[in-house]
Every structure is written in structure tokens, then in C-alpha cells.
Length: 281
Ligand SMILES: [Zn+2]
Ligand SMILES: [Zn+2]
Image (cartoon, rainbow, N blue to C red; front, side, top):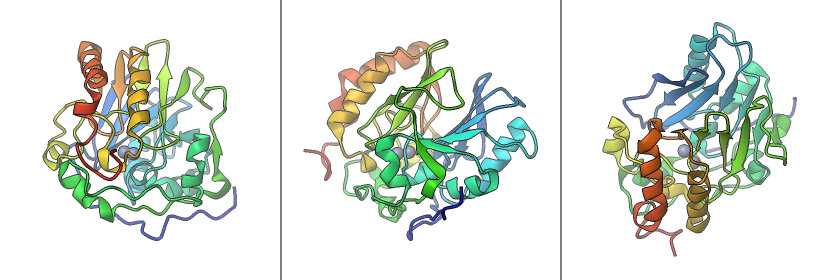
């Protein structure tokens, strides 16, 4: 682990937040959700467990907040065994370099996401014109240059297994980004859905601020392939998850999750797909 790591030139703090920022929820005894401004990170492992894994790395300049959350749950000076990326959008890799520098742990992402986390390719620019409110309007200030993790990131194994998380399988859920993955644990049907669907209408600043719960498709201004996005929601719904955590918003479980997911699948074009925007055709 020695090749230099760099954020893109447009890396910066984003002044957007929600009332949940800085707080955590124990979703399951070994699944903890912590909110960094407008995005969630997830920690898999029982409190004070010997081994645990971090999913995603929050907003730009949030490493202190993430380290504090980790130490509060697992003990001072503790660090995860690995960091698994659901995808490489700025709000999921924001603190990553600082964390890797501090912890020196391996990072994993889907093969198709690798160009976006090794400085090779930029995601398409966020669509500020998309139907859907204030956060989309803010999107031109979001960092768009790719992070470069050098040789500190590696591809997830082809066979669907997740390093350091033997109970979980990764599921390819493209659409929101080409190599987005969700994580699923068969034994209790727990789902980490990434941004395949979210439980808050992120486009609405009011709903982000209040975290009002409502299932919706992937965040619109960054989603570029709506047919794939729809197929991915369908794929996750067919797993019949008992509980789901998402990149944005509160966890959802049981009948509420089942009902809302079914609705999202049945009415995807109405609920999720924007009526206008540069990636809609
Ligand atoms: Zn995203
Ligand atoms: Zn996101």
C-alpha cells in the first residue's frame, strides 16, 4: 500500500445536512447505521466485537466524524478489517483517503466501479436540471472528479462473496452507477441497498432535513441508466428483504418495507423516474 492517493481537484466540503447527521441507529445487534450530513455509513459487527467492517465512507471532510462513530461503537483506537464501497459517488467516498491513511485497511469495490475510484474516469456530471428540487439544484457544486485510491482498492471477488463478511453476498445493482453493489444476508434477509432505492426523497431539501420517510428510487441527479435502475430495484424486491438500510434515509422493515418496495416496483416510472432531465429518454 504505497501508491499515492488523491481526491479530485474539485473535492470540497458540501454544506448540506439533515437532522439525523451525527447520530446512529442500531438497526440489528450487528448492524449500525450512522448518518454523516445527508448520507449513511454502515458498520457490520457487534459492539466491541473483535472484527467489524465499514460500508462506505461518507461525505467529504467527514473522517473525524466517522472515526468517532467507529470508536464509540467498537472502542477507542479500534479500526475495521476492511471498507466495502457500494459505489464511488462523492458522498460515499468522501472521507476514504483519510480513513485508509489512518487505518491502512483494504478497500473493495465492484470491478465496474474501479475506473471511478482509481482516478481514471469521471461519472457523468450530475443533472442539475432534473425534475426534483433543491438538492439537485445544488449538485453542480458536488465533487465530480474521481477519487484515486491507487492500489489501495481492489475488485470484489467474482463469486459474490464479500471479503471479511462471510454471511453476506454482494449483488450487482447498476443504474445509479455502473458498478453499484448491494449486500444481502440470507440468514435474516438483511439488505444493505446502497442507493438502489432510498427511504427519503433526497431531492426535497425539506424531506432531507426532516428525514421524513418515504421510499423512492435512486437519487435522480446522479442516476444515468433508468432501465438498469428499475431492474435493480426489481432484483432486490425479489429477495424479499426483512429489513433494509439505504444510502440515504432511515431503515425500513417488515410489512412497511414489503409494501413500499412492491409499490416502487409496480410504479417505478411514476415514483422514481423523473419526468424530465438529461438522462431520461
Ligand atoms: Zn450515489
Ligand atoms: Zn448516495
